[in-house]
Length: 367
Image (cartoon, rainbow, N blue to C red; front, side, top):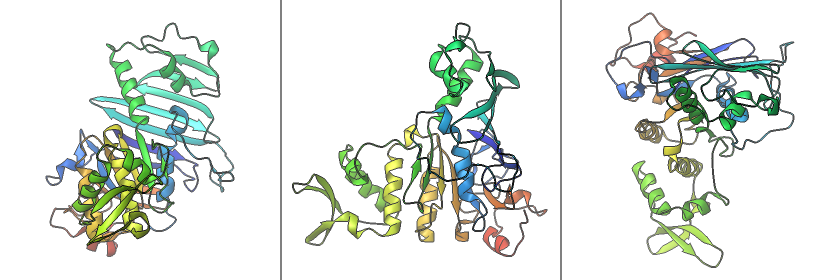
């Protein structure tokens, strides 16, 4: 799992931002939100323009050069901070797999080209790429032909794709787990036209894909019912391909035009949910922008139940700031280039009975 992320000079993060997901409190409630000493489920709140969306994009930057996942490059979008004279952006990740720690750092001037990168496992440097000067210390890499390496490609990606690693070696196993984790990271947004980064979909619109799944429409109906949306859905083919219809009494109507913004967001989330076994980490930006509070809580509980998926939500909804859902070390405030959990922002010993929302609104937590 992702234990810590740091970024400097990326978009609005001029100074280094450190986002630590390492557990530092031993609360006895909602213990499922923590796994192996790492916060598995978290919520980030903050004012408009504090950088919540940019935080997600920064975390997901890693997939651009380490995976073959599609991502949409937007012309004219600046990469480095406008106030800075330096155009180099620095990233640092710490992952925890079992008892092993893998640290990956790199620098870029744009999203696609890596200037420098380094991987350490339990403090030992195993891959180094410093402006074309490189070294690889992994069992199985002895015969790796670095003369064929194109330096415009990440050395880490090149090693993974062109080396038969020793699967009996601890460092090799950790490195493989890292690459598989990164390849299964996902970012989705409810407010950006239901955009996704790292999402693998088939051709066609959302409903075409659902219709082509085994029991897809039945599963969608069950998914919506679990969050108290009791639609009766059926599949019809009226000569223009399969479409999803909603049955109301004796009548049927195409479901897509009937959906509210919140239901559209849920259907898109369902499409990811059906691939959840292939997702290691998901960052959901403004996940409940179109949700009622009860629906927001239901979605959090449903995704918390996925034991093998680490989830970060961002939200403006203070009603979900409650110990009934998570814990004080799972709620984070992003403000002024800093992000900290509630438990680190007060001298008070926070307990399960505390009303975190009331304290937050009263200004009890200062970043």
